[in-house]
Length: 195
Image 1: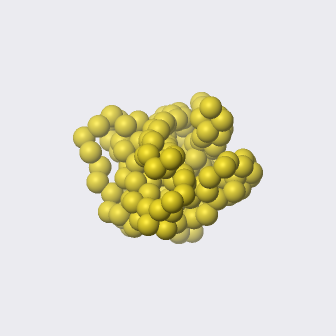
Image 2 (image 1 turned 90 degrees about the vertical axis):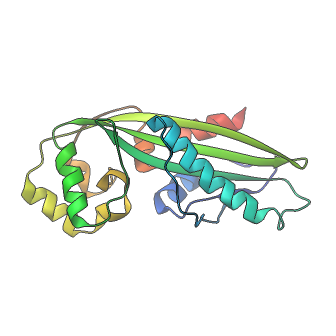
Image 3 (image 1 turned 180 degrees about the vertical axis):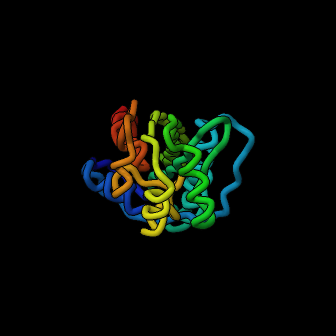
């Protein structure tokens, strides 16, 4: 997708970069380094708020660089939600095991929040949106969980799993946008930017 203004992705996630490239976006990557603050909100709003924190951090850092130019920053954040609890990235292998054990043979929700911040004619415009997908796991044995965790794959992912990798064999069903679970509901983003 081509726009009249530069697009900056406020994320270093290789999965988000890949999805944007696949959709034909021209963009640059400038990840945010802020320490995320999780507010007491419903999970969809938490995802949007975290996405906004990242996008706004990058937006503010680029203000000087784009002083006389319009630009757009896209931030995204994915959270896994089960039984009224947000499951972020696991701190270590034990936490990854506990998370996956909790989700085994159950259905949970994946929310990805998107924040689009544009500077248009010197004015800041903000758009927040989110997508929700239900994901159901098959029952997973402790042995299989330990084997998966040993690959290191779960440690940088919300909910301790990546749907697009070797863990795919444990996914029984999804209802909603698959790419949302990967980390970016690219169709929703594309459609919102077309307006």
